[in-house]
Length: 267
Image 1 (cartoon, one colour):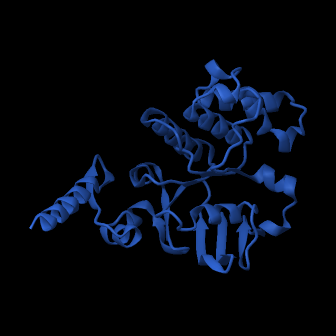
Image 2: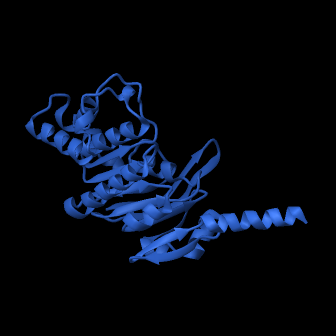
Image 3: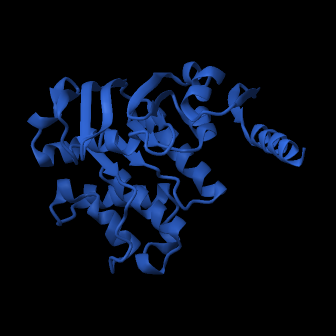
């Protein structure tokens, strides 16, 4: 379990995170949702010790993140950030090999190679494993970086907008893969995601953030509620249930609002 208590983070005198209290349960897929600037990526960076914070505490399995040695933390927790260095002159396979560095220190053993092969197969990258990153589409590169993160084989996998640049097919593939890792291998998955329907359909739990504060953090069906989403996004979101999943409908609501505005302007 990851426990965040009383977390505050300020950047240039602006409060980015405000008294964050969240528990991320082990072996489950947790999505962080909310509008731009809500603090989702900052919270992810704080949990992974990429940035410091003024007040509060973050524990992983009852131990403060500040008490982990860097290499021990890298074996416990992995993160994929939004910004990837796609100008690196390396192949997909070489990139995925980097995921094993906390274990191999650059000298891959058989178990390291097995984890690399597993990640390449899982993300369906074998056909392009020898291609250089700079020759790939944005979506292919994104899948390669996700594979690198999975190859690290940590108990906790944190992904900041892993669906960036992905088409519908590969977005579904990534979410299905993460769902499988949580269910079958007891991995704890945390994703920052903008598509609330992916969050609704694939998550166990959802943390909803706005303006640096937690609006609601609970099981997904407790969060995917009309009033919560209205508060979160400042717009009306209708919820339909399809095959047991809560689907958020907001496009027709936006069109209706636009039509109303056009009608007012025409009068």
